[in-house]
Length: 403
Ligand code: CTP
Image (cartoon, rainbow, N blue to C red; front, side):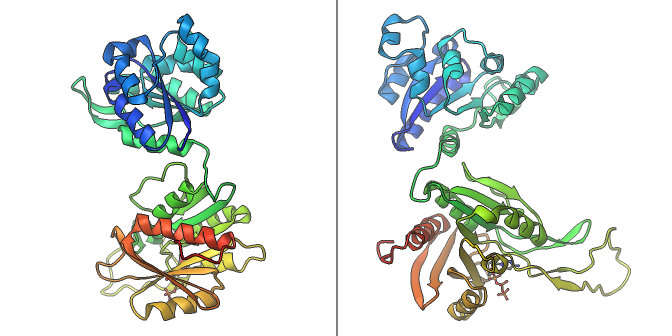
């Protein structure tokens, strides 16, 4: 977020006590933050608190002549790269959806061409109310980003949906809304992640132990380097990284279709998914009953997605992963050649190794005998190293020793 201008609107809800922390989180990420408070917000938190954490005078009043002279409401609206409202009360959401402009923050929201994001915070019944839901739907349809709300215990003593998202998560989500910057700006990176599920009957499937963590970390790293990232994901228990477009699939066939829909304009393809190599040849339409002592399920090969991408005439820079239990580098080299890849990342898998873990260890191999160890470490760190390596290769820099 280096140097990005975030106009943080604070409206009058009890969650406003968390907003100074949000200012700090945004500044930690390199943003400049200008706080605009509504009159209601000032009842909960002193403007002085925001001034202290943001280093800027807080604005509240549309009719403050001296402040307007320094930066008018229109200049404020132009200054912002993102208008973020946290907390956004039910009242303010209603204001925004009706386009009212009876206070400074509402006026800035109307006058800005920057993206607008809201982090709603209110009593669970107010959130569930049809009027609030209709207002939020209107805002979404107009392109306003809605962060949360989360659910849990509320200041009013009730439990339910309506809690403001935590400041650290709002800061991450805000980053995802800002236009991407970095060496991969203008490049599209297509990534597969997670396991696939191959149907045996309507209630059973064959799958594997992939958690998707490596692929999601690679997606986050590519987005952090400025890429437009599309993540084609099998079923996992992970949230999409901020700013990453996720396409959810189940089977290898669906993953293949989703990749083929996205690959035409992709510059880089990274296949981290643990795609099933075989699927039941004739999945049953009704639940298979326990009748015989033995059940045989005939399996047929799935399409190799990575090889299919690498075979295309106009193809992206194509990266595979090799998950091996033994003779790792030899197997990986064989896949590099057989699938005609630009790069392969080899790792050892097995009991308590890699699958479902936060750590990994990677060796990179590329045609012509190239070899680079990325070593062992957290998947998030290795993902950054891998993406930096790919950036160096794609941009034609031969010297990659600084990675
Ligand atoms: N892959 C793929 N589509 C498949 C199978 C694999 O895109 N149907 C990709 C994986 O995402 C990975 C690479 O191919 O990037 C290697 O996957 P791996 O499971 O290690 O090897 P396989 O090619 O399946 O061969 P084997 O299972 O015999 O080791």
